[in-house]
Image 1 (cartoon, rainbow over the protein chains, first blue to last red):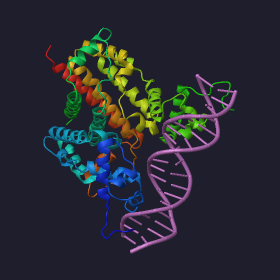
Image 2: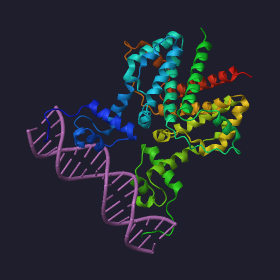
Image 3: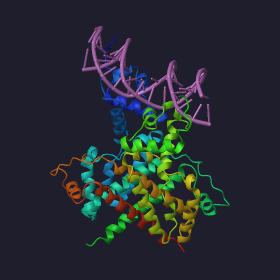
Image 4: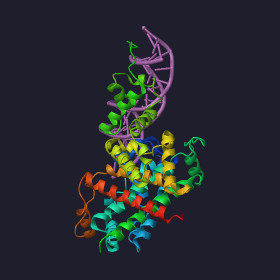
Length: 205
Length: 205
DNA sequence: ACCTGAACACCGTTCAAGT
DNA sequence: ACCTGAACACCGTTCAAGT
């Protein structure tokens, strides 16, 4: 039966199935993906250029859930903080997929319109032209890196309490597990925003 | 000639050859690597567990060049800034390799001893136990993310000057090419450190 | 238009056979 | 101990053949 009466595949379904596989094992193969969709590998090529494009679609599938309108809020610092947290929370929902997701920032071209609004909000807040995008890019860089940090295996820091007293103390002062990465994230985010606030206030009015 | 009189391979040589390939094309295959070393693919397995280990060795080869002693400096903020810049500069020397290098932070276990000294310096500076590692991890996250940003293709932001006046203005205010990423990096780094300084000063003495 | 089967070039890895 | 050749299972991709 070379062609069934109803179409079996579409791009979004392929992307979602691929994402499910990546969430489960961190990667996917074309045969796996095809099998999950009840189809032969070669069928995929009628809908998609190749594996690379599927990875792009899968990224889009996740990133689409981001609410960039949070960036367009008043006051700007609260909006930025909320946007950053939802961004990171979204990535945290896909731990096994992070290496695939976080190898590139969200392309602005996919969301130019909402960025326009965000930019307007930052300009209104008083940031200089040349600082606005730097602020957004810097936060996004921090978010990507934090996402990668999120999947770092835990126990690999072997600290000898005798030889590393300071390190032991600081490690002991931290929560364990996911909370640890959360804390580093919050400290970093707060520092970034405090720094931007200072930059804004130092600006000659 | 099944075995030459002199050994042809060693782990470090394999790692360096692999790094050269990744620098050139962003990836490598075992046959490529073997050919470059004047050897057959199967020979590699006498020195290395597999491709995954070669990737680890290659990462180590680069990361080894980092000078973590910069973290142990006075004043702490200048040391941190210098460390961060050398870290990023090192990654910038391997643009095609970044995706492979920046998928994980430098494991502290590889450098526990120098981190001990850094931690001591931060404690001396007055940071709280629970903040010291968060500061280092936050900066490292920012560095990883910035490295990925460094290889973002340029021209993909298509901005319509009519519909996106704010975005156009801000883009026009930025330098082009590598300088643009540099500027976002500097703005972010300065903000982070300013934020940490504020956290330090807000601390009850 | 869309699914299939067969085929292609290529990959990472294993292992007995050589010295 | 270390390199080789042959082999294995698997991968991504192409394409003529079917409806």
